[in-house]
Image 1 (cartoon, chains in turn cyan, yellow):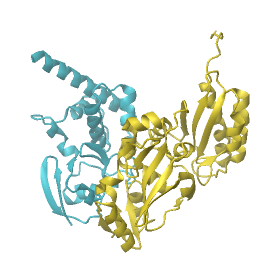
Image 2 (cartoon, chains in turn brown, cyan):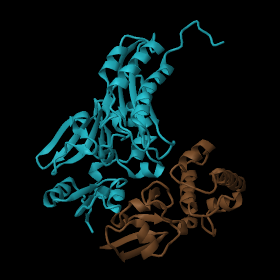
Image 3 (cartoon, each protein chain N blue to C red):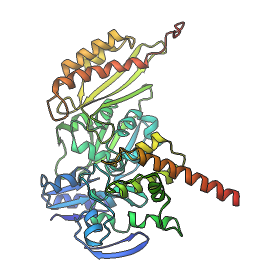
Image 4 (cartoon, rainbow over the protein chains, first blue to last red):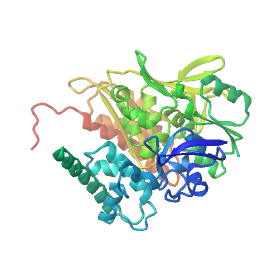
Length: 166
Length: 288
């Protein structure tokens, strides 16, 4: 089938098997390998992407479901912050040392970025709950939660700074 | 390789069901995708509900709340109607899977999958939820408790679809309680779960109580003996212990990779004891 959707702000049309999984479409057909497949059963969160602004697991979605929708993968996340190479959550992950092997990182970053976009005053309990569907087997989560806290703090300071300037 | 259809109306979906022998309805896909991938399910065709907007929506229908079967768990959790009229269901859904799974999985999918561990099932059972099935000949309703027959088995003829879930308003239940014992907090399949709703008089007497357990039998387990034994009593350890004993008699758990039957039996009773927390403080009694 012919499938058209928006991928990281760019319209794309391609020929796909309708029953292809979205994770395979992204990685194999389009070549965006930032999205990882860990378990393939919806339990690990490594394949998390944004579909119409909501986190979805690309291993549990059929390509046909993407028709007309807006998809954001880790490769396109920074586009939501014009003029920056990295999304602030990516920067916070680097600064807090929240990356070890890196396999869970794309899904983790997408999840945290989506969450603090919706809950700018998130506390530690809320952050932990938000990433409860993303498994990391290296860090023990402490630095990931630290990174999310840092991103919340940076966001607040940035907004206060902008208010001050205005 | 299954054909994938994206019906946009109920009629279109029912036509597809009539036309295909081996058509699976793909709601959220959280179970079906996994079972197709490992070859356990090999459908010839899929009808994906992604574009069937009429199967979503949560509305106030007077004496009950009407929930479209294709509504995601996240949408139910965000719904003020569900929060107000079915907090026990919201509590259960809040423990279902992970945030991503809740964004994807649907209430109808949880029901039709009919897992003994389905998190929505004990709350819907004690609220006397009904299901509405749609077919070419119209709509028909039946109690959820009759709809679910056994693990993975529901009374859904091939040419019908689970269309709505109807949750009666029960304002007299002042207490809504759900607890799940799992191996971890998120993504946990219930080892044992219990949902309860209670109507307590101001002086702490149980006027009415409904309880149901998950993962301790082929379907949701109810225990009328335990409920009847508690009516007219206070939520005190003695009365709760009797109810817990009755529950342990009633459940039919199995041994599996997550827990032994004996553990499940013990915990199913223990979960009843936790209701003691809702007993009103006795006046004049001060903490030391």
